[in-house]
Amino acid sequence: MNFTLDNMNSLYLDVLKEIGNIGSGNAATSLSKMINKSVNMEVPNIEVVETEKVVELFDDEEEITVGVYINFNGSINGTILTLLDKESADNLVSILFGNKPEGDIYSEIESSVIQELGNIMSSGYVNSISLLTSLDINISVPSVNIDMVSSILSVPAIEYGLESDKLILIENRLIIDEEKIKCFFFFMPDLTSFDTLFKSLGVLGNG
Amino acid sequence: MDNNIKIGMADYKVGEKDNILVTLGLGSCVGVIIYDSANKVAGMAHIMLPSSLEIKNNSNKMKFADTCIDLMMSELLKKNINKNSLKAKIAGGAQMFSVSLNSDSLNIGKRNVLAVKEKLKLLKIPIISEDVFGNHGRTIRFNCSNQELNIKSIGKGETII
Picture (tube, rainbow over the protein chains, first blue to last red):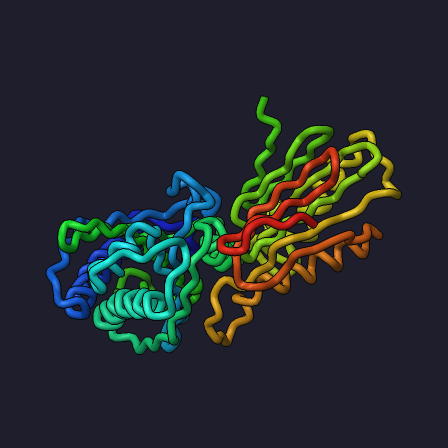
């Protein structure tokens, strides 16, 4: 059988949750190494949500958020979007630099730090998937944009929209130095990659 | 009274007189407004993808430029309008992330804009003004009574086209 997000049963969801858990742990560890501080993580929340409902996670569709986008290729192909609300991104910048950024626009150095954090966290994800499945996966240079949440979310909505009306959403809450960081990952393999992923984990037969 | 009519992703709405048609935070999607200025009737569509013909999973007609504009046109034609004096304004189609990609999916904003223009040309509806492409999101508000399209972006302020 072929996998689609619309026919996903609880077994596949459990597998994705486990990947999300391990990936989140790995991402938090990578982050902790980079900033040289302990990072506490709550159990991640992993859901399959309707594309059009994703923006409802935010109170204000025009809320400023930071998106870090990478694509991966190799045995499986797809993209990961890491999304931080502005407050969380500000908190991260302040943990690293000692003071919070002013206004809506980040300086070049602040923006490159956020890019690097997104890179490290998404790599943590991809690494754990690669380790679990022994699949070969490479990732691209990350791209950062700071904009209204619904315009950033149009990117995963459209990418998934080609195949499905649903999205896989992984929500992480981290605590560093008592500062709260809320971070969303949109893990978007293309549909043939889902098949490869599940087959390599032994949950999808070849027949 | 609230005269705003909000249009979500993959949706369209028709308004008239003092209605304001609103779409918050357009990214790579395209907002299309088709209006009759004399009768103060307008429709706004929020389009996600260029064509329903390219994709297997095309059950949601509101997602695509071709089918969504058709649906909106049939709704508009039920109103008191002059079909021959319809005009259009468009906004959106940004490329939010500039990762170099083997797939062209990231340039979907541009393809959306081109698909919308193609469709409007087929319908013989002239585009009066546009604010498209770039790498920033846009919130758009169309005033049905004076046909002004207000566009707001982060760090860029507001413009009217």
